[in-house]
Length: 413
Ligand code: FAD
Ligand code: COA
Image 1 (cartoon, rainbow, N blue to C red):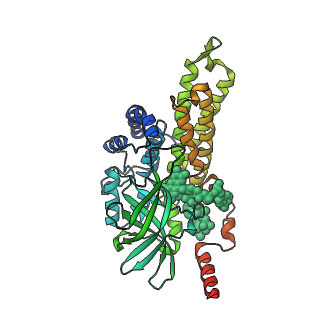
Image 2: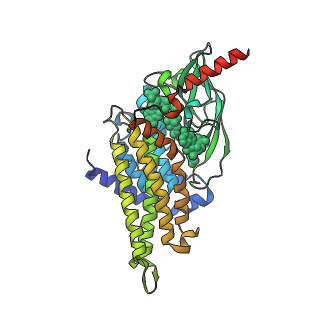
Image 3: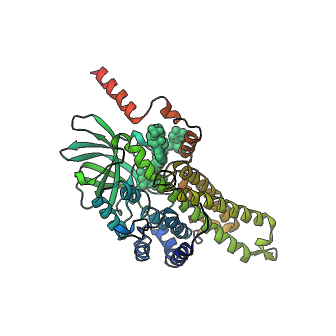
C-alpha cells in the first residue's frame, strides 16, 4: 500500500483546490447564513467532474477510487463543510451500494443521476432506531412483484433536494413472514408515497437540509429493489458494508474542516501582532500549531489507509474496522483542532465575521452522524476481540427481537 500520490492524483487535488479556494470559499459564509443548498457549487462540482467520480467507465464515469474522491472531499470541506458532504454522497454510500449490488438498469439510473449532480439520500435512521439501526421498523411488504413501503426516517441528509433515495427497510413476504433487511430505491418527484417531512434546525452544516422522509404506501416496483448479494437475510450486513465507504468520506469532511481551520490559524498567527511581534513567535501558540499539524497528518494517513483498503480486503468497500477507526480518530481530532484554531484568532475567532466559529460548529457533527464515536468503538472492539457486540451477544438481533415480539403477541392473544 503506497501513500505517494500519483501525478494524476496530485493534478486532481490541485484542480479541486482551485475550485474550493475560489467559488466554494466565496459562497461558504452565505451558504451557512441562508441555510440554502449550494446549487451553484453543485453545478461547478458537476462541470468539473467531481460528482460520480467513482462511477465506472462503462457507466459513463471516470472510474476513480475512493482515495481519489476523498482528495476532492478534503479540499472542498476545508472551505465549506456542506460542499464536502455533497462530494461524499455524490461518490460514496448509496451510489457505491448501487454500483456494486445493483442490476445494470439500477446502476445506469444511479450513475446518470449523480453524474448530473444529484446527491443521493441514504435513509437508515428512524426516531426509535438510531444507533440500533437494525431495529428499524420501516417495513417493505411484498405485493405482487414489488413492495409497499411504510414508515418514517429522520435526519436524512438532503431531504427535499436529493432525487435518488436508498431506503433501508425490514422486508416481509406476502404471508407476513420476515425476510430480513433490504434496500429500496425511489426517486423523489416520481415515486408516489414518498413525502419530505420537517427540517431540523441544525447547529452547523446548515447548507444541507436534514429532514424527515416519510413513506406512505410507497410503491417499489421489482426493478427498484436493491438486492444485497447474500439476500435479505444478511441484507443489513451487506448494506452496512457498502456504507463503510461513506464513513471514510464523513471522516474526510471532518479532516477537511480541521485542515481549513489550521490553514487559517497558521496565516493569522504570522500576521497578527501583540507585544510588538507576530503571535506566531510565542511558544504557547507554536506548540498548538505543531500539535494541530501532527493530528492532521495522523488523521489523513489513517483515512487514506482506510480508503485504500477497498478491494484489498475481499470487499469492494473500505474495511469496516479501518473505516470506523478513521472516523473515530478524525471526528475527535477535528473537535480539538477547530477549537484550538479558533483560540488562535482570539475574539475574532468568536465572531461570525470570520470562518472559525462556522468550521467549529460544522465539525461538531462528525462524532454523531454516520455512527457515533461510541458505536464505532463498539464496532472496532467487536472486531479486534472477535466477539459479537455486547448487545448482540445474547442473541439480540433484529430477527431474534422479531421472534420475541411475535411470541409475546401470540401469548397475549
Ligand atoms: P442514539 O442512538 O439515541 O444515541 C444516543 C447516545 O447513546 C449517543 O451518544 C450514542 O453514542 C450512545 N449509545 C447508543 N447506543 C450505545 C451503545 N450500544 N454503546 C455505547 N453508547 C451508545 N441518518 C441516516 O439514515 N441518513 C442520513 O443521511 C443521516 N444524516 C445525518 C446528518 C446529521 C447532521 C446527523 C446529526 C445525523 C444524521 N443521521 C443520518 C443520523 C445518525 O446516523 C444518527 O444520529 C446516529 O446513528 C445516532 O443515532 P441517534 O441520534 O438516534 O442517537
Ligand atoms: N460493515 C460490515 N458489516 C457490518 C457493519 C459494517 N459497518 N456493521 C454491521 N455489520 C454486520 C455485523 O458484522 C453483523 O454480521 P455478523 O452477523 O456476521 O456478525 C451484521 O452486520 C449485523 O450486525 P450486528 O452487529 O449483529 O447488529 P446490531 O444491531 O447489534 O448492531 C451496529 C449494529 C450498531 C453496528 C449498527 O447498527 C451501526 O453501525 N449503527 C450505527 C448506525 C449508523 O451508522 N447509521 C448511519 C446512518 S447515515
